[in-house]
Image (cartoon, rainbow, N blue to C red; front, side):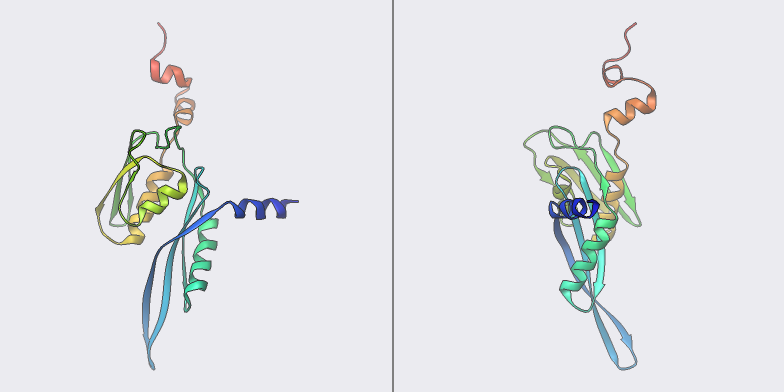
Length: 173
């Protein structure tokens, strides 16, 4: 039974290749080429993961990246308007990504590598700006760190020992 559920869970996941990069290692006989694939996997309902795979062939590198992404999936709190609960900044290495919530109809305003991360997480209205490096791997990892640090209003209220309405409207005197 659990095996069927796992297969069912895998079938509704979408995968998107962010980039494929050719790397080489110099050995005695010349250069040995290898391919690196950065992949994002998500269900469009708040679950998303990023993974990296290396191989001599493209399809194998992508498959390894997908497997890695499925292992590193995490939950993102998404509002009813398809945005995020609050602004956040993610840091990873030299990569810094500023992520802000946006009103309905804004769309995904995000550069290159982080766009598929937001789309596959189910975030439809968001503003983001990459600060610092232009290295795709560090930018997407910084965005993932930012999304992991988001907390939903329910989690914040529970942490403060309040109800959600008390948190937003204030306690009655």
